[in-house]
Structure formats: C-alpha cells, structure tokens
Length: 151
Image 1 (spheres, rainbow, N blue to C red):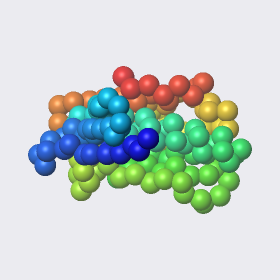
Image 2 (tube, one colour):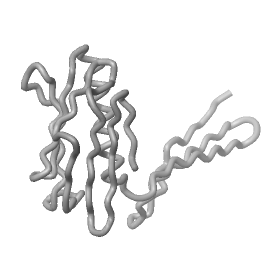
Image 3 (cartoon, one colour):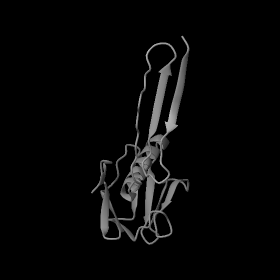
Image 4 (cartoon, rainbow, N blue to C red):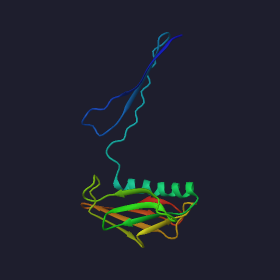
C-alpha cells in the first residue's frame, strides 16, 4: 500500500492577523481522509501576557540554574532585565518603551524595582508591575509563592 501525504499547507491571507494551518492526508488505496487542524493565534499577544511569560521564564531559569535569579525593573526606561543574582549573566532583556512595538506610556512596580526569584519559584515578597498604554492600565502580580497573575 502506497500512501501520499500533503502536510502543513499554510492558509494565511496576507492581511490576516490569524495564523492557521491545514493538514491534508490521503491514501492511494482505500478511502480518502481529510484531516483539518487549525491552530490560531488571533491578534498580537498583550504586553501583560509577555511580561507574565518572562516572569515564568525567570522562574524556569532559577530552577535550571539551581540559583536565584533577579528581575530588575527599570520604570524610567520601561524595560527589565532577567539575570543571575550571583553574577552579571543576563538571561533576557526586554524594552517596552515608545520606540518599540509595545509602545508603553508608563511602567511601575511596587513595592520595589526588583524581584528575587529562588530555585523553588518563590520570592521574598509580592510584587506588582503596572503598565499603561493609552487609557488602559494592566497589572501583573508576582506572588510570594511564585504565582504569576494578570489583573
């Protein structure tokens, strides 16, 4: 039995913000099977979701390194750095200011501008990062037990 497969045919109109794929399979002998699987991501991910994902990344790096990681938030630059606490090794840098695609107008954190994340994913205190774009304000909270939440 010979089988012919046509796989992963992109179906994306040039102006669409959704991405989807169609997978088609057929057998030469026997019935024709068409399998349609669509994976879509409509619209760009929100800035709050990106910050939240980066905080989870910092937790993963602390666990992988078996050493604390520090997230240093720089509100005046609308940026943050994820680095190893014991050295100057930088794991990730992200700028969210007006000269980037994110175009944040303001960024602040409380109670401090740094989050120390231990290998178990926890931190010393709960930190809230507040971001503003236009009239919309979002908060990302990193809890003491390591729970990351978008408010």
